[in-house]
Image (cartoon, rainbow, N blue to C red; front, side, top):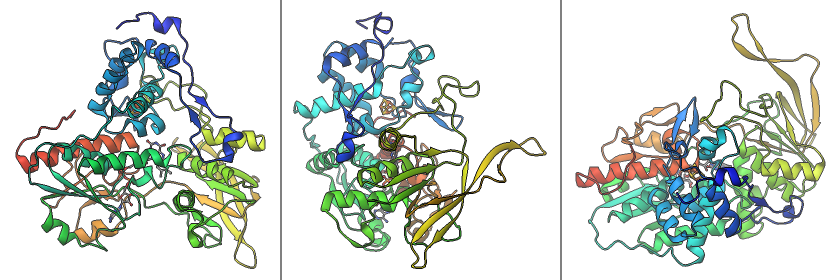
Length: 496
Ligand SMILES: Cc1cc2nc3c(=O)[nH]c(=O)nc-3n(C[C@H](O)[C@H](O)[C@H](O)COP(=O)(O)OP(=O)(O)OC[C@H]3O[C@@H](n4cnc5c(N)ncnc54)[C@H](O)[C@@H]3O)c2cc1C
Ligand code: SF4
């Protein structure tokens, strides 16, 4: 460690963002990169502590703590401080197949468990990660790594999200021949059709897919396994199959008026808007547009925030976001101590934009939707709600109760339902006769084997809707298990 006092000399600097009002005029990434000099200072803030909690990913109290792919954070922080970017890149790529994705959109649980964060703002780990990989591409240090020897073994991966891509990358590097089947017209899973362009530009996703293709991975798009190609074909033509089909089955709101025109699932909206951006207005059901409309997003999470940012760019008339839970505290509470992920109130990019545009934060807390009301043509015109409170019942258990007299009517022509996901699409697991648990494909973490002999599963399909960094973790670890299954032992790394 070359700079022992950096954490005392330098303050944390936040990643620069483009002006919130200006950026509403386009769909480009809202963040702006740091300069090399700034990043050197930020890297110097790392204390290189004896036990780097930042790189020891785990789940504590249901939340991710530390980096789930065990990125060698203190090592690359120090290399960045020294300006040894290429070596920093080599260290980063040892554990992370796709730092250009996580460096942009990971919620950075590593920073919540940074030791410096006990008393000071954390080291800006995510921005450093992003700059290392961006420099790798800019300087031509990232080139196709074509395996010298092939094993003759074949593997089919169903689904091209981060879990499928990470599995494919690992298994291809181990010399196996990998084919990815994807039902969409482009690869990437939720990286492509889910996370909006202003958070993760689609060129960044395409660049990685092209690299994987050059390295020997086959992508078969517009092909739904179980419909366009049978499971039996996969089972007979490949030595092993990994299901990485995600968990995109959206939770519905079964309320009066749900069928009104203008009430949509959040994912349908986000997918449509990215398709419009990539192909121009494709019309029909694929062209939900918020222009001039009063928009309500139901669900207080990140998917809802992405809907807000999308509606703002389409020049909506107004936007609010309903959340069932109370506003989070501004600092950690005794039940959420370091190194857990800080469960505190934050202002996401979309909230900042909406505040600038309309003069107030769009979030409404402790609110329950009661029904949707349509006009005589079936078009949504109102949303009816009631306020909620979190109180204790007669058994001293916390319960949500409606507060009488807080009923409210909101004018709205568009509603996006973003209240979570219920697991993978049921069709394929049913056809295959797979065991499931809580709606997800059943397989033990660390083993990834389903109840069918040569069939494995990884990512959201196994663990439920989660994070990119967990999808990469599962994809990598499942790849090692498949390699062991095919070869008797594995050359691939594992942290389990
Ligand atoms: C709107 C939204 C925003 C998000 N933002 C973030 C974020 O900022 N940061 C973060 O870390 N995480 C974020 N997440 C979560 C993250 O995107 C997921 O956890 C991650 O993509 C899961 O990866 P996966 O590979 O398991 O599945 P997915 O990315 O869901 O990919 C599954 C793929 O399988 C394909 N597929 C399914 N069935 C079949 C079939 N039968 N045949 C062929 N193909 C099939 C699907 O089309 C899809 O492409 C977000 C999620 C959503 C919904
Ligand atoms: S992948 Fe996420 S958790 Fe890991 S170092 Fe990067 S930002 Fe932190």
